[in-house]
Image (tube, rainbow, N blue to C red; front, side, top):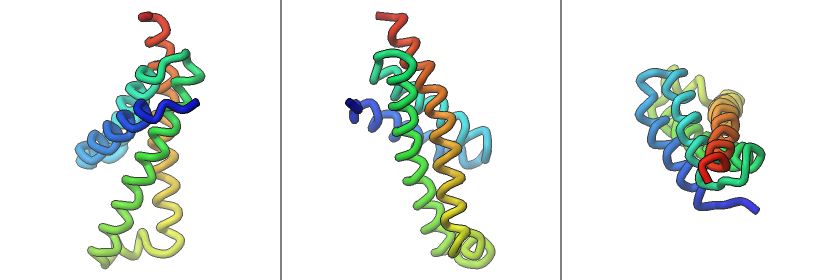
Length: 120
């Protein structure tokens, strides 16, 4: 059973840290995925498998939120950014951001679940 509180906390951390990490494009998003995924896995507990699942769900949810915001900003601004995220580019942008956040969060979630199991 999914612990939605853990997923929610992880997702919020991912979005907040990801938004702050926009100034450092790849490293900021990867760091957000690691912190948010670890938090989701730790709060969910139950070992690495359960932690990875919760990190993955939190990362996917946050990735979709961030990607949709980027697409709306791109559409509003227009120009080169709007052309980049328009049409098929929208699908690619959403998929790339979601996969980046979800993969990092799943790995960190496994670590969080393992750590939680070791501390209790």
